[in-house]
Image 1: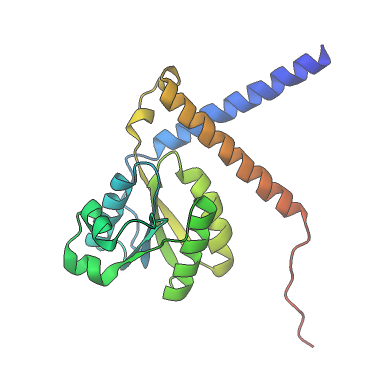
Image 2: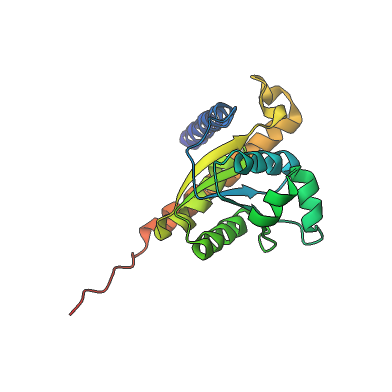
Length: 205
């Protein structure tokens, strides 16, 4: 009986966390106008066209001085991305960089950190899908905060997740559960890493 009770408690905690995660995802959109930053970063993936267009809109409106499209398919060309972004060629040619090395969110974080370091940026606006934003920010903050780089969020809505009864729709429920599980895995990883020894700066003689 104790084992069954323990399983039920864990299941209840997991379900409560899922509902809180879903509420957080839905509350992120529509996004608020961000403060101006030095750069804008958009993370590609499913539904990338809307994300790239939103990021380009931020660049065109002067919210950032330069844009990185992270995780671009190696088969895509600059012209392909320009067509997706619907960008003015003058602005696109001068101020948009494409990153081809990232294959997942961890790769996005590394690619973004490398770009920010190369550009000497200290403030960024991060654009990705609403459901992806919590996990993306865990990875990005882990890479950016040690560099002293701050990041704001600008989440793009996923239509399938906007309904209050998203759990009644198999595709929406699957997406939310999978993303929540990935988010928990990152939290667990960071908790374990946090238990280890921390590097300290050497004391000058």
